[in-house]
Length: 376
Image (cartoon, rainbow, N blue to C red):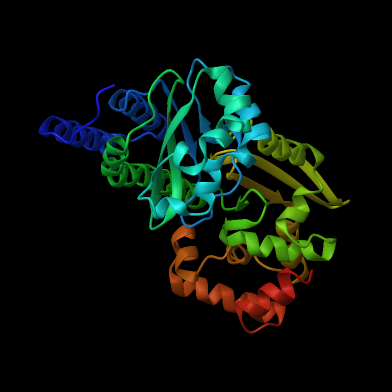
């Protein structure tokens, strides 16, 4: 093909490419657009897109969901690449070493490996040669030297290698494509955070709600969650993960979601009995994310909390209104919030709270929670 030279027409083309890339609002559509445009611009026969995940994180292992290969390649190619080629791929070594920052994000595979070694490598012999591909030009997208993605453009063995002029042209589009890709990644993270906030603000007050990461560590939780966990410690439940481990059906779903690259599992429900008079209702679904970094949304309803309120009301002979207020105190509401919910003044609430303190023999809310509600 004729060499690319930097003309006004090429400048206009690159400007249009960057502007259109920034207008995309979907990662999948962005990848398809970039692949099509770069293949045309550099006369490539195909391309492979690699997604490296979160910001401020070292590039880790890929799974099949992180790879976008040409549509005409067989479905098993992703698995073959990850199992047979990935560890020895010189481009992956270049990316993991952070060398992309030294070459301004662009490299040819022939710059990384001597020609004789390359044609005998697993990358070429086992992967590219059967697909009639030979030459590779890789563009790495990064923000603050953190790798977020890369695309490798391919040419067949009967074509010429990518030229140095084409390398320089690729370097011109790296900044704008990195900015566009990071914008889309950040947008997805913000949507996830908005979803978390929405769910936390709209859950039923009688339930405890948890947002869990892949390892079942707690990312966020509702006001009543801490109280729930405290009330369950005497039953041998030390964490929300420990509670989940007691449900075989929910754990099976979680493991399947991760192992099978299924970021969205069907909503699951289970009951867990910790004691003859203590049962837990667990409702699990995925909130967002992908199979590599899923987020799980767990709602827990326990009769332990209601039981402690019922027992306190009976033991201390509380009135119906005091019983209502004690339940709202247990949920973490302030006097002002309780007044609004019961349509009574804040001062009336305060008088009822003081009456509860006197009957229970405590002086403040901390003692009421620790010594009365959790101690019964």
